[in-house]
Image (cartoon, helix red, strand yellow):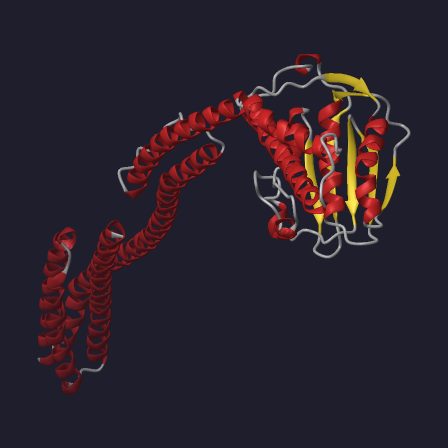
Length: 480
């Protein structure tokens, strides 16, 4: 803008100078033309007076000669390069006035013949020379005027190009500055966004490098410090979680032994092997047995989950028929379904052949899904089990007509000890069944998901590969 202002001021100044010069040229041209016209008029008046001498006409011619001197004096503003020609013009005009004065004096004294002779011999040639010099000055002034006009037009064109070039350059510079400024902001923001994504994935080793010395640079430094602190805390959490899992896995025998004794002695007493029981004793023993079995199932789930998290869970891969495993799972829940008058329907895909997987864990996944379906399906409901082959996977779906799961609960029901609202109200619900099902499916390289709506039932589906790669067969499970 400063450069444009200076350029504009210079252009205005040049325009003012050129305008003054044009005005000067116009005045000079007008003065030269007027001098030529006056000279012609004087010749005409004197010639008329000589034809028929009259005192009035002679007096008018004398006055015209006086005015001619005034017009010559007006030529004082001429340009320096014309000064020599104007001086010559003044000298010629002085000679012309002297000759004309002599002619008029002779005519006024009655010597007309002598006056005409002086007019023809002196005045007329001087007038011709004076006219030629005047024409030269007029033509030069007109040429200078045209040259100045052309120069003004050229300067105007150059000023337009300069202003257009400045405008384009300013826009380009503004765009470059805008892009540079945007990149100086966008790049660090994108880098931090990517860093946050990697932090969310558990990657804490990388540090963010931002060269900005503004708030973004400060934010980057704080992010690096936060990453270091998160890495430290995450390592502590991982260590504590690993120690917890190892402890529970190592304590499996110690935790199961007393419960097995409680369950075994309760079953012996209920069988009346040591004598009869009264009604109250029978009721209490059955409560002890039920609670013991529930506690043992909970401990088994926790221990299995701990083994998976500790990386000590191994898949015992074998080749088996998926249809037989599905039928075995249905058999395990048929009694509970019959008590609630729940119909069980099995739809097996006949094109599914033997699969390679850990049969016991697949059966446990299916049992957990079926047990949940029976638990949350009301009286006289229905449950359908379906298998199908999709690409290189087999899919098993368990669809029930139960209470359904709210959208906000569907994402967390696969987490440890997390349950939907209906699950929290159900009896004997540990909140680990779906967690273990998800872990076992993922150990096989598969996936599990749910589709549900409140009041319209739920469909749980898991998919596992038909054939496992040789490198993954019977390998220890990695830490979750």
